[in-house]
Image (cartoon, rainbow, N blue to C red; front, side, top):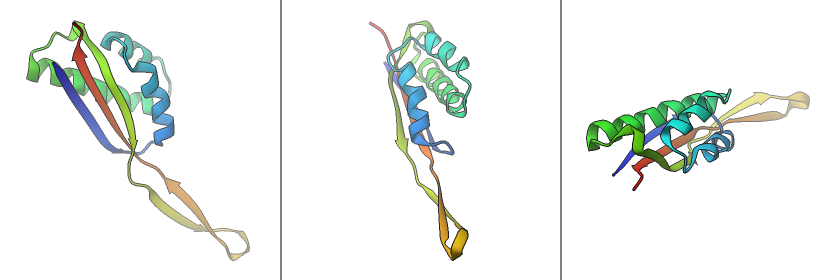
Length: 111
């Protein structure tokens, strides 16, 4: 049994979010939550929310036992980029890109 949760358009860079998702891929759900709760950054807090949603989807929709779940897939895709411009020195236009992420987590039961 698999269950999936997706959060789209999160205001965190995909490169930073991938560092967190790489830590939990393939781990037991309880171990993944412990790892994420000890990481002190924004992408870890957002990943906890998505992981809890995937766990709830597995328990409520599929009737899975939360103790037997593991993180089968943890993927971070790039979302749309909000491009902002500002006046820079010597009459140039500066650029600042605000990147967004889509976090996808799939949990499954271990055989």
